[in-house]
Image (cartoon, rainbow, N blue to C red; front, side, top):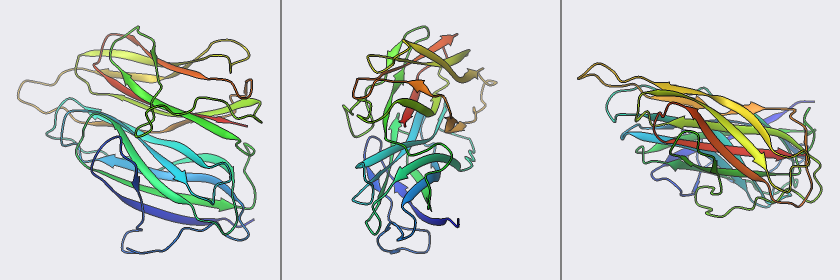
Length: 279
């Protein structure tokens, strides 16, 4: 069946602050973003998010969808991350990422689109989000809810529990009451390249929600070597990664613990952002 796309974009000026995206380029007043009458599912989200790189540090970025159009209240979706050791020099191109959502909607009701940056101050930010409406949830099925957390990892071989969510300092980490599986992880992570080294990142899923006991999953690798004296180090960007069809058995309405660890030789401070989708 045909799909339908709607886009909102906008600028952000600070971290840990929810900013509504209300424009679409030259369309400065596109009006309310309503769920189409014949498209009761948000099948996926297509998004890109960048910083102005005006200071050294690291960031992660996410969008937050709210409003009466979403049956389950809201959903949070990681978009990407970036970082660098200096505030001068650098050029980042972050292609959009499409994240499967499979969220059931209320026809005719409004969806509000917000964006947030977390981590260190990197100047100003620009975000763009496209919603893909459809007649069906998609191949992954209908998502019953998500748990999204973020935080900074400051040392290697140190398990760091993620418990924040930008402007929401203590988000719920309870699994949905009607879910049975952790279907997918959506994540982004990046360091500030404050030290020469190389690490791999791992997420550790545990708590009463995980039926099979602690689960450790590799997220990626990150390295840095200092540049020649007098030169500028370039910035690095990472668009969000989707690990789909994980199908980890969970207990509904129990607490999920999400932690991240760097293993290897210290590269500085990293910001990690992880979303767990349940079906």
